[in-house]
Length: 62
Image (cartoon, rainbow, N blue to C red; front, top):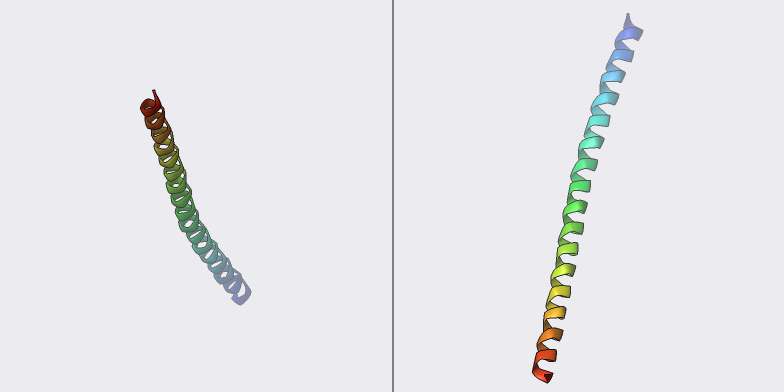
């Protein structure tokens, strides 16, 4: 029975460790997704501003 108890405790410890690893990975990936999303939105905003400036210059030249 001692061997069975040791195996059971080891199994519980492995599942607990796996759960902690998955939680950390989820948090890290959520942060990475947020960062990528902010960068993409910033790029879109910058392009919109650049296009707006070009259109204003063209209007002045007409």
